[in-house]
View 1 (cartoon, rainbow, N blue to C red):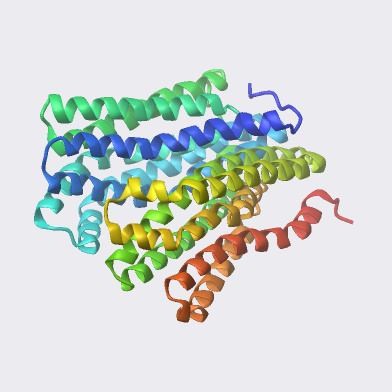
View 2 (cartoon, rainbow, N blue to C red; view 1 turned 135 degrees about the horizontal axis):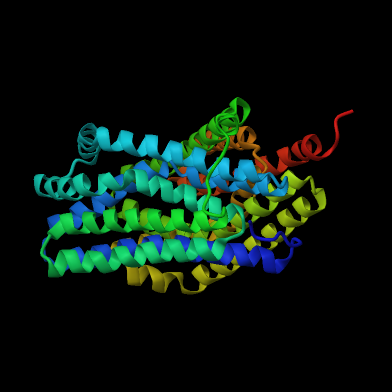
Length: 441
């Protein structure tokens, strides 16, 4: 049995968006707690090692973010069609991908770590700490990816309260175990890795139980439906498109950081600080993107055009409201936030100079994030992928044309990237809606 589908209302949008926003925010909180725990050991190399290892795992797992995003759209459409078999099959297919990819990471852990350390260029002591953490936590890979699938499957059906409870509970357990294993049991950096492993494993177990309750403790799906060629191809194409889109976005952020580094250490530090401020505001936009993804996916499955359009309008309305609030907040107290985040006078001065761009990022990105949710929910992933690639090309060209403006030009190009993504998706929307909702002649 799945969550009852209600009309597209403000309450429904917020009921999905707010829990997902809180769930997303527990992840950076976990990083802060782990850093504080390891920082108590008094060794900078250990703290640096845990921070670097966390970045490595973020990059590894972020690549497979399609297991969450794609699953939301697929199960939402199955719900809209009242297709109970496909509802279960979506989760099982996601589990198969998670298991295969996770086990591959475990098997290839030595070369993965070697390449990561080579690219990072840390000291010998930092690399040793990374290895201690990495070779413990890597065994959580299949469970971490399964948790992505579970989170997407629950969210796609509107069970965001359960998704929040699962995510928050898993991260809270990780935090508590990290403190116990690192500080009390004396396991050091390896203890932080073990805490993450235990948290992910138990999270997956509890998640499977929650999912089992929703399907009457029976995941039975006929083999012909589970391995249906058309459905498998749809899943592969959807996930592949989301993967390419994510890789393009990662390239854009890496390019931004690289150009900032060429401008000097002070500019690099200021850009990084401001970019983190902008992306923090984006966490809230991502919650509304998830809400729109679920609502629009269900509407496409049920062929309810009016619900689809209203879902977009409410998503844009709430997203724009949050983005404007974040913008005004940063303009009002941004200098105080900068002073809190760094004690360097030089970095503070440079960050203040470019603060306006960090404030504009969430406003420029409203369309990008909301329409990402629309396109994933509607399974228009190919168009989403193509519009992202087009926007990134525009971003690089804009940066080149704005080179005379220095770091101002770099920031303007990034703001343009966020705005262009939303604009390009908006321009594709009418034609895709006609193709999806209007009957063929």
